[in-house]
Length: 400
Image (cartoon, rainbow, N blue to C red; front, side, top):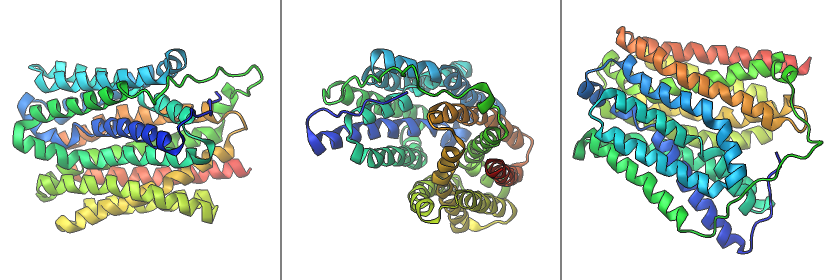
């Protein structure tokens, strides 16, 4: 699908304003991704449920996102990105407002499903607006700022939520987080600089990826790699705090700081990885090295009591290494995708993220409920090794 790339008058100041607003929305979306893990213990105790049951909330979020994501993209094309983005922010805010007030655990889970619906708005709407409003010479910078803002939202979520919990409880923290979504929605709704940013319909001769392409070995190996990346991230950013607490008696604030270090490290790693990918050129090697280092750091954190500083450093290293692999990951996909089929292939590969988002919380929840906190780190390390094998196999197929 071809994006409209004719920014309206206003120059750099307009582009900066629009990009800032879109980045604010992306910040909110990733903040909401991490609204549950830092408060796992408190919410679990309040409702009297297991880690596995609490994982249903994250699974509901991922299931709804998976089922509705494509339809949200069509809606962006039909009614415009601005309206869809505002609706997504409002739906997310309503979801966590009700979740914070929910008297029933299953109402809490249902609200995470509703939040998954709101989550489908961000990527199609964000990219449509940026493509419409930002000049071609600066679109790469806008996309980079967009990605970084999302990572920043995830990085600040754990400490902010813990501070809010200490002041007003987890329920108050959820209500305050809901207000964040409402506030950004209100600013975007009152800013005329963001156009509807409808995208053009595909041309009749635009190449389309067929079933044979999507089921080819090289694409399937990349799908496995994408799914494992999401699985790994879920384990490290979602369960580090509780696993380290049960395994080594690590205080929850330290564990949550390690989670934040992982997310902040990922943001730094993405910037480093972009430079590295451009200079090295051997994208498979860069990606495999990054995933290997991620697995090594995770395995070390599970096998050895590193202490507070050591755990934070290990998770920061895992984040940097994981982030550094991402630009090379995307370039690997481009290398094996026929011209004109990148959107289709990337969309298919992105279902790997959603699949892992559904499965990983249940896997790691079961490990915690069965008294295996060490396995959280070790399973993550093994997943990294499988990811390296998938990259290697996919690269060999592409070269062959």
